[in-house]
Length: 289
Image (cartoon, rainbow, N blue to C red; front, side):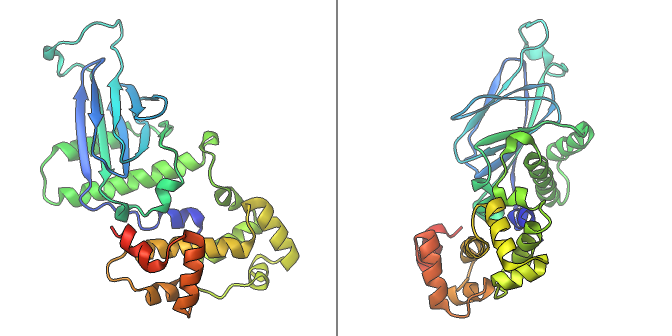
């Protein structure tokens, strides 16, 4: 598994909130779910997504928008061609915009590292011709069928993962340094090794052997590409993973310590507090889902 895979790991909607709106031209809807992450797409028509703080983002059919919560945001439907005024009798008019939103209820559904890696709001244009798929999702939201909640949860997960993968490949995304470093044949090998087995007792020599280079070469190249030395990155990744594990029900400090490579819970607690500023117990108390 690579760094992006670990960022996406654990994404699993559980009875997600869905909202389907049909808006006449030049009208708006305010989304106030308070969710930590909401994915919106326009099935037909067009409009602008307006975050609480930040510039508006145009949305065309098939475009996907991600908005970090809990702040509300607004969607404004574009004027119809010619700027005529809409009437109630136009409900079936193709000039109406259809907005579909799916919201994750809690950080437990998406982890806490994912929102931190994203801007407050982003839009990924539809380059794949997804209108047909979105029409299917829209129909599923509008229907009342057995197992509907489960189907919609999995569809939301799929749409989120596709959106994130496309976003990180865009030039305006400014992805984290570690994501760009995955393409490096040496540094990428070391990163994948760390993410595949964070509990392994890694040393510079062991990582260098995985990458097939000398210790000095790995240390210099890794630091230049990622921005931190290999073992510093390893510790930060272990603590990020531990922070998520600590929010799981019935998690114990000792169990989490073992899962991230610490046989001694006290050594783990010291490292966690140094990196996170709180002891594992205090973090679990204040960040439990």
